[in-house]
Every structure is written in C-alpha cells, then in structure tokens.
Length: 114
Ligand code: 5GP
Ligand code: ZN
Figure 1: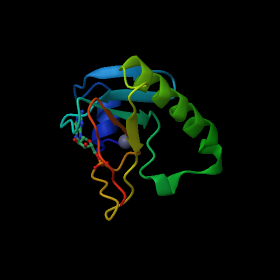
Figure 2 (figure 1 turned 60 degrees about the vertical axis):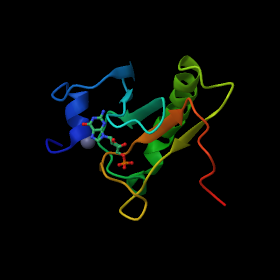
Figure 3 (figure 1 turned 60 degrees about the horizontal axis):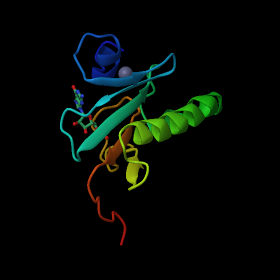
C-alpha cells in the first residue's frame, strides 16, 4: 500500500510520534490533535475501512480494544474518561483510508449525541 500515509508511517517513511507498537498494531499522535491527548491506533496490516473487516479480524479487533484501554490508562485518562471513535467512509468523515481508532481525552469532550 505505497500510497497509504499510515502504511508509510508504519514503514518509517513518514515520521510520527509513536506511542505504542507490537506485532499487530501501531499507535502514534495525531498530527492535528483535537484534544490534549489524541492518539491514532491502527492495524499494521492495511485494512481500508471498518466495512472491510472480516471474521478473521475478530482477534485483531479484540486486541485493539485492550490496547486502547492500556493507552488511555498510560496517558492518565482512565479516571476522568475519554472517547474512542472510528470514522467510516465519506459521510462518516473518514479522511485516511487505513482503518484507525481515535483516542481522545484530556479535556471535557462534550456530547456528540443529543
Ligand atoms: P479520519 O478523518 O480519517 O478519521 O482521521 C484521520 C486523522 O489522521 C486526522 O485526525 C488527521 O489529523 C490525521 N493525520 C492525517 N495525516 C497524518 C499524518 O501524516 N500524520 C499523523 N500523525 N496524523 C495524520
Ligand atoms: Zn495503509
């Protein structure tokens, strides 16, 4: 996936402030943070969108959930709270087509829903 920005970050071709990595996932600070803590967590394997998840990705997604919990705790967000979100597709607001979780926290985030 040579034209994918996030694959290039994983490959070290584009610099990023990496906060966590293992054999399955990679996490780094968002370049335009929307909150004091704004981390992106991505699978190492290129998956374009949430729509592209397959049954064999269930272990990966469970792993990502636990890594998000750890990242939130490591960044001091566990007690006060935080938000995790995925944008999917154009109307979902997705700009980078490599599946990613946003982890946001460090300020009151307000409600997204009425
Ligand atoms: P999306 O809108 O696709 O859910 O979110 C993409 C996110 O990636 C945005 O919050 C944007 O700021 C971030 N982003 C885009 N390009 C780069 C980059 O080159 N480096 C980093 N660290 N973040 C990026
Ligand atoms: Zn990619």
